[in-house]
Amino acid sequence: MATISYTFWCVLIVALVCITRHTESVHVCRVDTDNTTDVSVDCANLNLFKIPPGLPNSAKNLNLQQNSITTIAKPDLRQLRFLMVLDLSRNRISKIDEGAFRGVTNIWELDLSRNKLTYIPPDLFDDMLQLFHLSLSNNFLTRLELSLSVHTSLTVLNLAGNMISAIASNFTRMKGANLSVTRELINLKHLDLSDNMLQNLPIDLFYPLTLQDIDLSGNPWKCDCHLAWLAKWLLGQLPRETRGAEPVCDSIGPNSYRLVRGLDFDEFVCQPKTIPHTDVVTIAQGTLGEIVCPVSADPIPIITWSVDDIPVSRHGEDGWRNVTSQILLTQSQSLTVLSTTAGNFHVVCNAKNKAGTTSVPIVVQFIESNDWSESAIWFRFGMKFEDFSWLMTLSVVLSSAVSLTLLSIVLHEKFQKCERRRQESNEIYERYLHDSNGGGSPTYALLNQQHCHCREVNRRPSASSEGTTTATDADPFTYIVVTE
Image 1: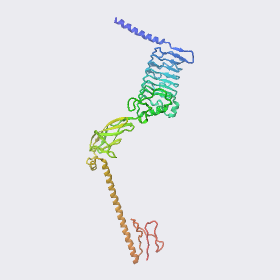
Image 2 (image 1 turned 90 degrees about the horizontal axis):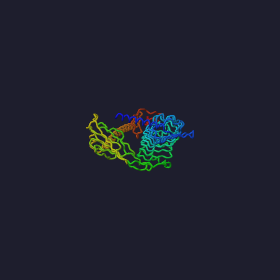
Image 3 (image 1 turned 120 degrees about the vertical axis):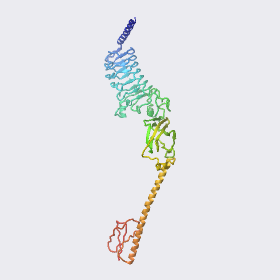
Image 4 (image 1 turned 30 degrees about the horizontal axis):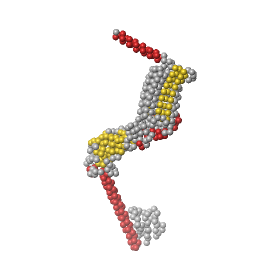
């Protein structure tokens, strides 16, 4: 009895499947042949599970909306080379085979809205060079990788009601082409990105476009420093944006629920964000080390530091502060540390701006160094000062005193040498007076005594005639020859 019942149910299931397939195959699509040059095929609302075969090759309009089609297979549309309008909306399409639209080059309107698509390959529509209107609304797309540089004839693009959170930068950009060339090639006029999951967009994404209207409403826009360009662009689009509600900031942050277009540019701020860095910083004992706060923010945040839970505050103009007997710190955007003993210090960097605060912990590890002596005289002397700037000032004063002392010694030696030369010149002059009164051999005297030249008289001046005084131009000394 059980065997008969099982057999009955199996036969019944097979019969139902056969009936379903037969029913599907005998579904009759209404073909409008009144105009032989514009054949239209209406297969709407026939409970089809796939695109029926045997459609007229000359069909230009094909309506397949409100069926149960789940897949567009590669050969389904290959014979419809004259097709211009294709409506596949309100089906259950979740998969489109690669190359399913290959060879269908004349389509100018394609409607795939209200399906279950999660991904569209970037080259899916590349053969549709005449594509004018494309609707992918109300699917489950998460990313848009379509390039308008390929679909230069596309004028209307509807992506509303998806889950798109990212748009590729090549959506409006052409490799190797400048902005003016791109604007001439891209003809998109109507763009609907409403009711998606967009928080941000690639900078200047829409600048190559000359849109007549755009709808960005219903997205959780994150109004931080990365979105300031969009507010500026929207201000320029004000006369042309006539469709849809205004885009509004999300519920998080200082600009929650505010209109994107209504914000001032300085209100687009980014909370300090930690950037990749090393959690442990190693510094040799007795060596100055600099630690940079690893954050990125706009506007620039205010940086504060703490070492082993001790806040570090500026002290004096130079910012040096001796927090402990073993570490010296300077506070600005970075931290300078110095330790004479090996050990670890727990440093925390706090970055704060109007968007929020971020704290970054860093471990500073001082390792032993053979080149360092803790008993160094200068360090023991410098550690007596709470503020290291006094040690720097004292060093400058001592250096200046030593320099002045050396300079005075050099000047004193120079003065002494010149004084000895002056005395020698006086002795020569007195000898000249004695010889001129008492007679004797010719004498050479240095008369120009008002200058103190530390130089030996090493040659005898020439005389044009006996009893005549001459002075050489090349020698700064003036000589006189005296004869009996």
